[in-house]
Every structure is written in C-alpha cells, then in structure tokens.
Amino acid sequence: GTGRFATFTRDNFRSTNVTLTDLSPFYLEKARRNDKYWRDYQKLDVPVATLVQANAEELPFDDESFEAVTCVYLFHELPEDARARAAAEMARVVKKGGMVVLTDSLQLGDRPPVDKSISGFSSLNEPHYKNYIATDLSALFEKHGLACSEKYMASNTKTLSFIKK
Image (tube, rainbow, N blue to C red):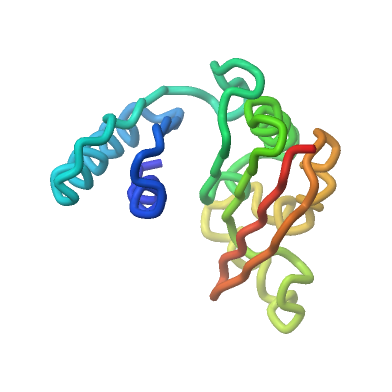
C-alpha cells in the first residue's frame, strides 16, 4: 500500500527495520514519501524503509526472514486461489514464533446483524468480495503452520493475528 500503516508500526517499534511491498510502483512511491515524512517528523535516525515491488503470491524473500508480517486490506481484493497463495507466502517468510497480522473487512458471522447486507459491497466494483466474506481465514493460515491468536473488530474492519508454530 501507501505505507501509512507502516508509519503507525514504526511509531510503536521505532528501531525496527521495515520492508514494504506492493505490486504497484505508484503505491510504493507514495510509501517512500510517507516513510520520509515520518522519519523527518520524528527526527529519528532510523533506517529508511526497504521498498520492494512484489506480488503477495510470490514474495521475493527467503524462508523465515521476518519477525512479523502485516497485510492490510488486500485479501478482499484477491480471487480465492490468489488469496490462498498469499497466505502461504506470508506463512513461509515469517520466522517460527513470529506473527502474521491480517486486517481487512468483516466477514459473514463476525457481526450477524450485518450479514444480510454485507455482500452489498461487492456491487461497488469488488468482484471477489462475496467469496472473501465466506472464506475461513483461520483455516487458510492454519493449513500453513500458523495458529490463530487474536481477533479484534472495530467498525467494519477486523484484525486477525497468527503465530507460526
């Protein structure tokens, strides 16, 4: 994405090296600017974020090369098979004992009163949304050696965390 979430991560883990990936070179350019803005604003001597143009389905990183992996509002954009490959890649690149954190839209069953209307979002040029809201994300990640840890919901967003066994 545009690196905004990475600045929030850096607010809490100031000395952490950060690698940002996106398929879009335009989003990565915005992420570069957001990273520079954050570093200038904080007046900290911390490493510049590493920017890598990559598809989430084929991450160009070694196995178990990251302590944590975050994914923000990507999964509802992906077709089912691509979503499964992206989950497998996140599990592959996180170290044993590391964490994968996924933030995206609520799904069916998260807030039953909205289940009848939640699929309406798919009419807003979101062709994979109906499939996404019915996907068992826990099973998707557990298949690749991750254990579901926590679930947090706010408004129409949920965050799931997984620990690599």
